[in-house]
Length: 122
Image: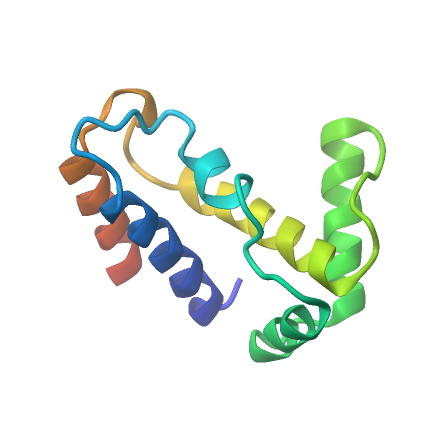
């Protein structure tokens, strides 16, 4: 993952957390950030997003297919730019959050923001 993509996704997570209440439960942070709404809306915008991040469309498709086959035993994502970009960002968001040195089931908003900003500045 490029630094540009990593930072974009981290900033997306940080923006979400900043909008949360101080007593928010973050145990479902990944789902809340990447599965409650589309990350990118529109085929053209998704195609431009791939170009912006220098991602080959076929490599992104293969990445999503491999992930879904491994996780679910089948592929459910439609093969179009919007669906692939949204699933790709979902997967990469999951990877980023798994690298946080914090327990999302039991952390405060301030602790989470500190961990995210530390990762962003690494």
